[in-house]
Length: 191
Image (cartoon, rainbow, N blue to C red; front, side, top):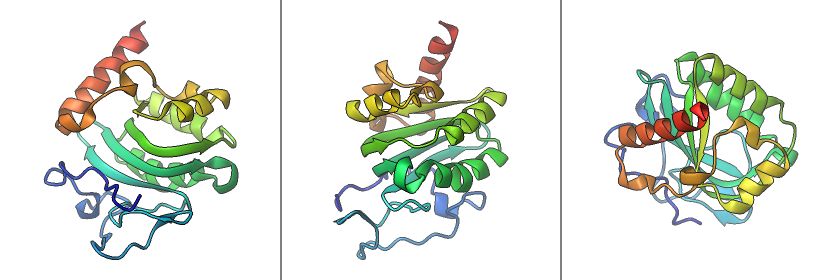
């Protein structure tokens, strides 16, 4: 897992550590010291921690004018033992929302497992995003993770499935990816 870096081709366009409105403003990352791990597996030092012991993220792109963000995840999403959604919602999502972000693209191809807990934070996030005509889209989450979300009835708060599960997102510029996801979201909401 230590070789799985967050996507870096947009770093010339956006870096959360340089964004004064970001929760990660001023963060420094080593290229050589592996300080984070998912259980006993070291992960690349470019991933950011946010309070979870098993889930890390990287804000790949944020567009305040459009109110959108693209976040990539790695690790195990564990609400049951770690209440990961609470840390994510309170420490990362809410500060973004205070700056007008309401459209969330969550990339989960490196999310290995999901363990459900309470759905209160998901419901709250969904309602707050909807108040601003926003949404939460899951991109490329593994099938068994999507199944676990569905089994816990948490999938109702996200847009997922179909072309969102098979999007070759790395081939796009961030605005193009946002436009494609927005188009898929609009089609689903109109149906």
